[in-house]
Image 1 (cartoon, rainbow, N blue to C red):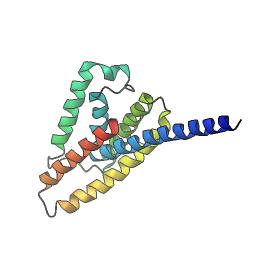
Image 2: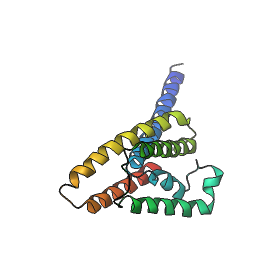
Image 3: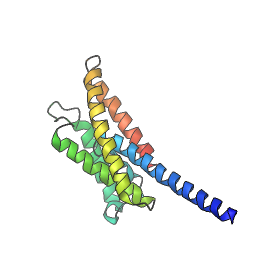
Image 4: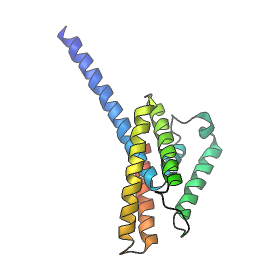
Length: 163
């Protein structure tokens, strides 16, 4: 029947759109993580995402996530903070981006691997791009001003990606 083919096609297109939306959100969460490593996962915990494992659904997890994220925002401004492009910083961003993407995929009943890969690539790209942009802007503006603007962008991206 012609109607069945159209129905199947509509289902496939709808499923592809849903997966695309998950991957788009994963990319946004990854970009946020490239700027501030804990911000995307913290946003998912604070929003009580359906994809969180039980341990991260505990009320204490929200306080810990907020504290960790706040501590990172402060530590980023300290002169002794290592570059986000150093191997430990990049590895941490890959881990946090992957975890955030897995939570997102789980909340949407999707397989985690495409989202994790998407978020990880976005985190790496964002880390490099934002590092270079911050260095360039800090030549014209005080670094703390640039850093706070980057904080705001990271938080906004995490809110968009987790919403």
